[in-house]
Image 1: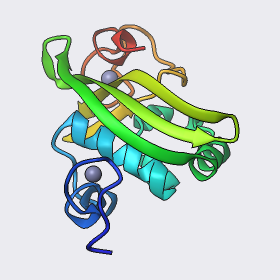
Image 2: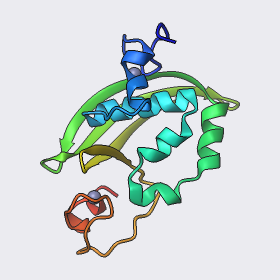
Image 3: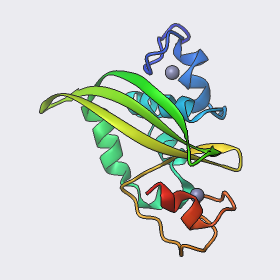
Image 4: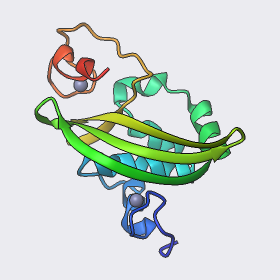
Length: 156
Ligand SMILES: [Zn+2]
Ligand SMILES: [Zn+2]
């Protein structure tokens, strides 16, 4: 296992790269979390994908669909293009990347911007397909302590 190259495309072996996050270490940057989520798709670690999505969105995720997508795709690679702070706060970040995979319908290459928020010291992926329910002036469901409108509402 120690000699397995990390699927995220770093030059490190899995155990020294995304593997430590899958085992419970906390990624220090949104990019590290994003890479570890790509690797989790490659490795079929659906629990990890769910646990690293914004807690307020976790119940809205389609676990079966995620597992199916993970299993039925042959993952071809990841390129992280840009990692930037978002909204002038270190608690939010946007990562631009290109992921490549192959499934029954052929080869795909998608360039995406994913948004991440850090709450209570942990980075979370903000899933743009899952609605968040909160009043604009309510505390944000991500647990950041900010008002929803100033926090994740601005990301969705
Ligand atoms: Zn990695
Ligand atoms: Zn938030």
